[in-house]
Length: 207
Ligand SMILES: N[C@@H](CCC(=O)N[C@@H](CS)C(=O)NCC(=O)O)C(=O)O
Image (cartoon, rainbow, N blue to C red; front, side, top):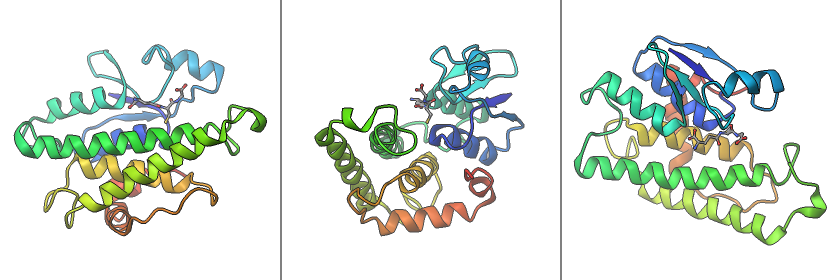
């Protein structure tokens, strides 16, 4: 199978880590929606021109990291899946993933509002909304920090909650200007260090 997208995208990175943890052979092809020729190629696999996208061995095109992860979970089966198949364990993992996704989405929105990747001229930025989004990211990750068990988010076993949260947390930390409120998340910092010491995570750390 082929994974399209660079690991600068936290959504692509969580798929890249999962493919490694599942030991699934794949080709990684960095396509950027911001480059017209690459966008055209990417849209064959994701009509929105976003990353990640996955081309399966039987020729299917899957868009959206949640869909791709669900596909990979089914491929490896319930014994190996990083997302529990049912019950409280599944609900706990999905809840962590949901809050993590909300926090990183707010952070990505800020990334497109200010700094070198801004899509809007500074005079068109509505400051109260950007500030609110920084707050929402902070509230989300600090809540997650309080939910953390040890050594992994839900206890002894590494799950998709850890993969997703570490990829999203690393993005949030990398792209947070000094002017944004400080994040008080010692447990998430420790989680990130623990995970990034593993080859599967280390190989996907964006430059
Ligand atoms: N919900 C999607 C989000 C994907 C996403 O936002 N990708 C970003 C990169 S981090 C992207 O391609 N943005 C370009 C765009 O939306 O045009 C997923 O989980 O795959």
